[in-house]
Length: 111
Image (tube, rainbow, N blue to C red):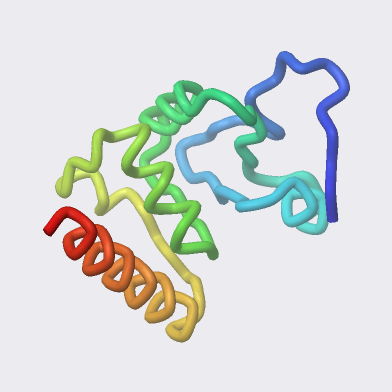
């Protein structure tokens, strides 16, 4: 489940459409018959701004969806309505539990 970019130029697999499926990993994109998009730029997230062209962004990975929302839409709460996150309830709960633990540990380390 690893990959390497051949050209080192393309930030995306696929292209952004009005309704687009955002995949977390290139292998997910391949398994979906190369439909939707997958961000593959390892260094920069600025290409995520292209998601502003989409009216609906479907994603089955909470971390990928929220990362894209944060980078493409500056975490604007009004823009979160563009996202349809169909991850499992367990994964969503785990994501927020891990985030809460990180915030607590970060706050304690500053004290």
